[in-house]
Image 1 (cartoon, rainbow, N blue to C red):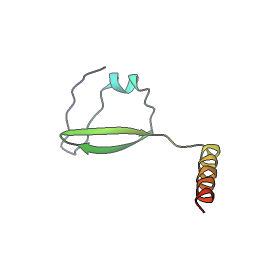
Image 2 (cartoon, rainbow, N blue to C red; image 1 turned 30 degrees about the vertical axis):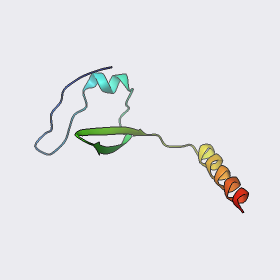
Image 3 (cartoon, rainbow, N blue to C red; image 1 turned 120 degrees about the vertical axis):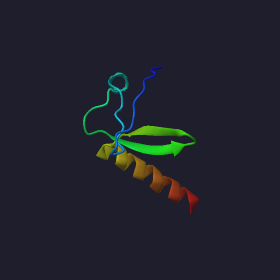
Image 4 (spheres, rainbow, N blue to C red; image 1 turned 135 degrees about the vertical axis):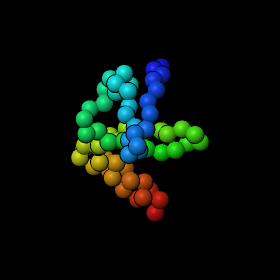
Length: 69
């Protein structure tokens, strides 16, 4: 586990420390979902699905809906 400190700029930006970016292998342009939990700010990496993964997801949804009828 890595512990680092950072601070907010006057514009409200917060720099994620390099050690954490390296540990998580964060690449430029990656997107994150940001949420608040109590007194914590949480970042969750958003992973884009491939077309194949999306097609498989919708096929499962269709199967489940058909099974419900």
